[in-house]
Amino acid sequence: MSIFCRIDDKHIPLYRVLWIAATPHFCGDPECHCEGLHEVALEGGESVWAKFEERETLMRMIEEWQTGES
Image (cartoon, rainbow, N blue to C red; front, side):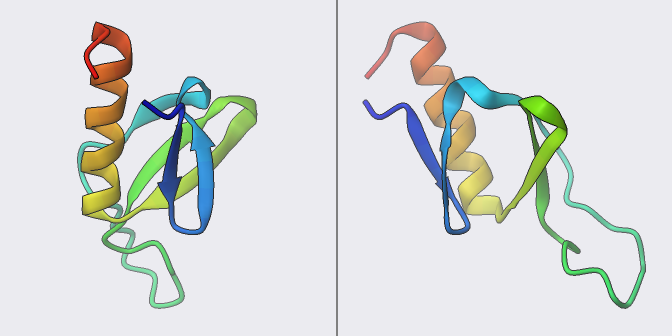
């Protein structure tokens, strides 16, 4: 099992993920480029934005990593 999950064009180490938004972002700003994406908070105050499929893959990978399943 890899310790990296690909989100957008980035390979994110699983151990850097602090939390994953359960609902997609919506602020209503017409200039916003994150509408409908799920925020993934990383250590160091950084965030990346994941599509639903990327979010689901990340959730599964973290579950497998923490439970020892492969």
